[in-house]
Image (cartoon, rainbow, N blue to C red; front, side, top):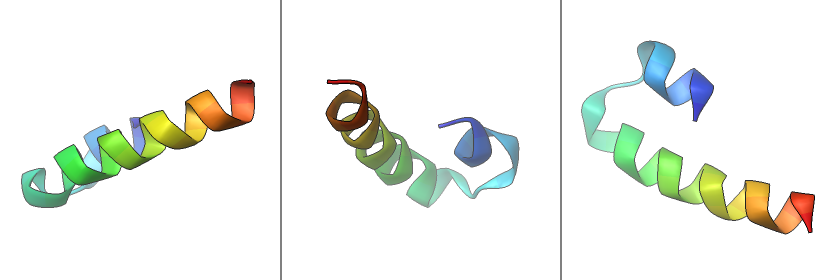
Length: 29
C-alpha cells in the first residue's frame, strides 16, 4: 500500500491496495 500511494497511478492504486491488504492479512496470520 505504501509503494502504491507513493507514485502509482490512481487507476491501479485501488486494485493494488486491495491486493496488498489481502497479502498483508495472509502474511500476518
